[in-house]
Image (cartoon, rainbow, N blue to C red; front, side):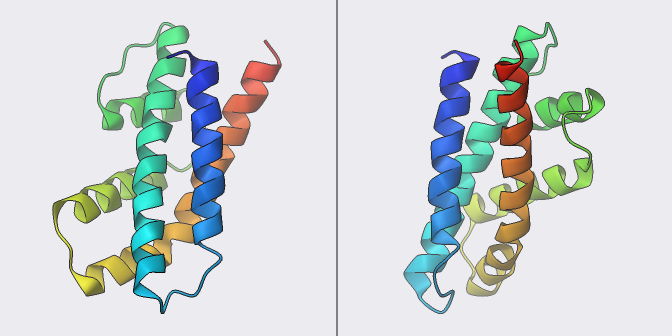
Length: 129
């Protein structure tokens, strides 16, 4: 899949993620749906980064490598925030604990902002090509 198509898919997923964050967290389905949408978005984010890095001639294969290379290329400025997102994704994928899910859910607005910032940056780069 081309970088354009990956970026388009990421943009649509981010819209859905943002929508889910507008609802009341006291509804268990809202929290679960938001976490699931976050998982989709973090996957699409690193895969879009991988495709973009490949296009730039930079080899990165794992999510962590992609984030490290993107940070080194100054595509975002807070590597720790992105590594935290990967950690949260791994935690939500491996087990379900209500307290952990709530803690991660409460970090989702910041995660969304970081992913949206990256999306905006990459879309701007593609527009200028």
